[in-house]
Length: 457
Image (cartoon, rainbow, N blue to C red):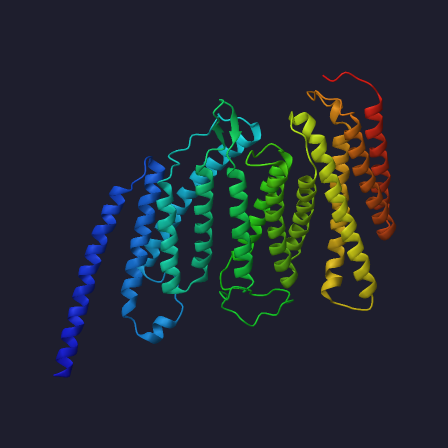
C-alpha cells in the first residue's frame, strides 16, 4: 500500500513538473516575440541568449531529481547535452553583445576625442532593448552558477554585470543641445568612471575573499601563487578594469571642459575619489598576494589621484582651452611631484628599518617605490616641458605671460625642482641626477619663453 501511494505521488509530481515546463516555455516564447530588438545582430544575440537561458533552466530542472549527495557535488556546466547547447548559445550571444558594445564604444570615444557630435560608427541596432539580452545572460549565468557551482560562471556573472553598466552608460549620448543651441557634454563619461571603479573594487574584494564568496578559506596572505578564489579569471578581470579606470581618469584630466555638471573643483573631486578607490583596491589586492602589476597600477592611480586633487584646489579661470591648459599642466606637475617625493621618503624610511630583514613585504615593495618616484617625476617633467613651450605651439592663441600665470607656473616648477633634488640625493644614480638637471633646465625654458616677446599665431 505504501509503495503504490509513493508511486502515485511520484507520477503526480512528474506531471506537475511537465505542465510547469510547458507553461514556462510558452511564456518564454511570448517574451521573445514581445521584446525582440531591431536589427539582425541584436535579434540573433537575443534569440541565442533566450535559448541559453532555456537550456540552462531545463538542465537545472532535470538535475533537481538527483539524490542529495550527488547534487551537492560541484558539476561542470557542459556535463549534459542541454548544458553543452546552453554554453554554445551563451557564448554566441556574448560575442554579439561584445561586438555591439565595442562598436558603440568606438563611436562614443571618437566623439569624446573630437569634442563634437557626428561621425558615428553605425550602431547596428544599439538601443535600450539590448539590455534585455544582457539581463537574460546574467540570469543564465546565475542559474547555471547556483546549479553547478562552477566558478567560471561566477566570472561570467561579473562580466554580465559589467556589460549592463557599460550598455547603460553608452546609451546616454555624449552631447546634448542646450536651450541656446550650443553643445555640451552630458556626463556619461563620469558615470562610466563610477561604474568601472565600483566593479573593479567589487571584483578585487571577491577575488581576495573579503566578501566571503571565495571557496578556499586557507589562503596565506603572502603566498607566491595563491588560489585566492574559485572564480577563474576574476582577478585578471578586476585588473583589466583598473586599466580602464586609468584611461577614463586620464581623459578627464586631459579635457578640462569634459563636464558641465558643476564647477571645475566638483568634477575633479569626483574623479579623485574614483581614482583613489581604484588605487586602494589595486594596492590592497597587490600587496596581499604580491602581484607586481596590481601594485604598479595602484601606484600610478595614486599619482592620478594627486593630480586630480591639486586640480580641484586650483581655480582655473573660464575661457578658451588654450588658456586653461597651462593651469592644468602646472596643477598636475605639483601632484606628480608630491607623490614622487612621498614615495622617496617612504622608501628611505623602510630601507633603514629593513636592512637586516630578508623576505619582508617592505623589502619586496622598495624597488617599486623607487620606480614610482622616478616615473612620477618623469611625468611632472614631461608636463613641465609641455607647459613651458605651450605658447609657441601652433594654433595656441595666448602668450601665457600674465603675472598670475607666471607666479603660479614658477611655484609649480619650484616644487618639481625640489622634489627631483630630494629624489636624486636620496636614491643617487645618473638617471635621477639627470632628471634633476632637466627640471632646472625646464624651469629656465619656462621663464625664457615668457620673457621673449612674440606674437601668437
